[in-house]
Length: 71
Image 1 (cartoon, rainbow, N blue to C red):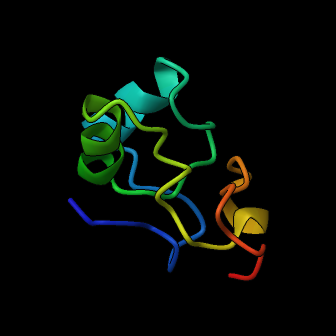
Image 2 (cartoon, rainbow, N blue to C red):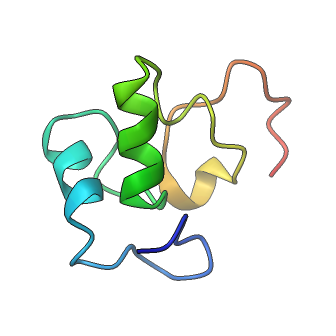
């Protein structure tokens, strides 16, 4: 699996951990983080969106509260 899918239009459909994070509502259905990355954040009690510093216009994720909004 990949650490992220931001170089693609959508995440790989066979990324089981990302699918699980999407199904359980930890990330939006359009999330482009890799499943292992997203699931690791969830297991640590953090929102995967908070640790992601990518362009939210592509993934439609929650804005990082520590980010100035630039990709």
